[in-house]
Image (cartoon, rainbow, N blue to C red; front, side):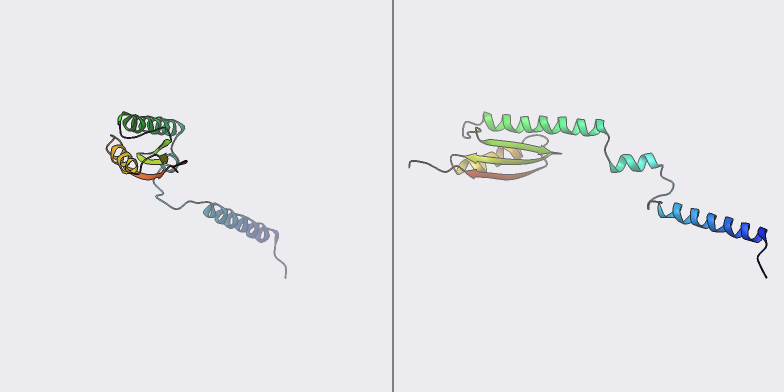
Length: 129
């Protein structure tokens, strides 16, 4: 009562096809099957050109905010650091007078291109007073 050679080969071929189907299904990604893979990849990860442009825009915005702060006669920008990421500004460092903290925030928030602002400025300790 054995299995003839044809049946054994057919069984092997079916098993191999089933295994291949399972392997390819396990690597499938969820999402819109009609969307080309290149469109999905570019949406998930910005290209090198896009990242360079974003860094350039961030640098320009940082410079613009720092320049606006420096123009103000009421703020000493010596220890103020400006970081920009996609329109979001973070001010860090320290100032000599408490009033400069809010003044710096007001000035920075009105610079064109600023979409949000985090103010982490602190008051410098006064030595010898």
